[in-house]
Image (cartoon, rainbow, N blue to C red):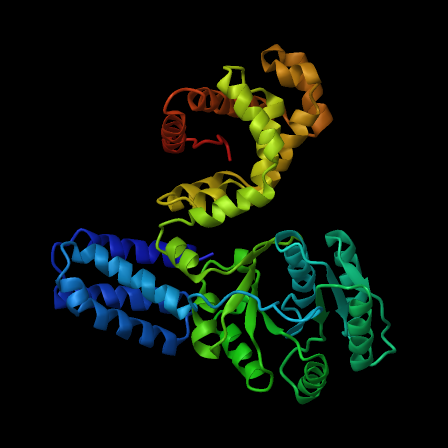
Length: 457
């Protein structure tokens, strides 16, 4: 997300960051580039105008002129204002009520409401240790209830069963009673969507809202619709007291117009964003962290939190002990690292959160895809335990057998073995004094190679 905006803003701000003095001329030129970058990202025009005006007013004030490094202060101003337009400090859910806390999900058809209902339930169950029940009042879309039940089972959530011959309000009443009886902490109600905002749908959801008195009413919107997402949210907000927004398909949106427009246009903060298709692919939305990533400064806090949640700590400690004792990094370890990387969204996702690594993340994304990780795992799984532990024994005949078992080619086996050797060298550096510095230097060197870190991809 935000790739094009990050690239454009990065060039503009880097040209100013080293300036010892900001003049009206170079400031106007920079602001013009910022304006174009935001418009190309499909940010609402009113938001762009307001943003540029605020940055200009601050940049021409004493805040910059009194500074020893005005170019750097200008970058900070842009960062602060990006954070402000996305709703600084407004994203937390309000669940401090008598259980069950009710969350009502609203949105258009196809926006990802049902999936987001299950993802949010999974997030609350795993992050906040809440007992969660979900229910569907969508009696119109074929298999909507079955879809939510399947997702609820996958996420380990309680599901309130209902049928399409019931009225939505009756389903809501039954779900609320069931949640109370089961002592659920949270009840999430998935509602019906439509292809456009119509009176019947709004009347139905208003009735549900009046009865349930939810602590949170979240509008689910597709990030790929750009500034239209903000306009649709605004239309809903005029008839329903929304408390926040869930932005779906953020991983497929390279522009970021919706994220930068929703808060300003609707007055409602983005609380979560969907970052993939899996049940755990939902992230809390932190405007300050997103602003930092847009400007290429990384998001180390999110990376740490992700590691806490998704990395297998036992395996990580076992590998750390092994490397510190000078033992070799074998293919079993390599497979574990591939799996850990996948759990954290892949290499590009991890590198994108590290300061100054945005371009390396893009290069990694071009070189590697999820399919390649799957292929690498399949190859290692086709080896014997002995071959994984001592890869040097893998000769021509063994390569043929492994290729046949994994549905790959001999050159794929050779490529994997070469990549493993490179990782082995990195891990050896990591085990020495100054290990992390040495490893990062090694990674940078690999990225500079003509074939990159993953030759042939």
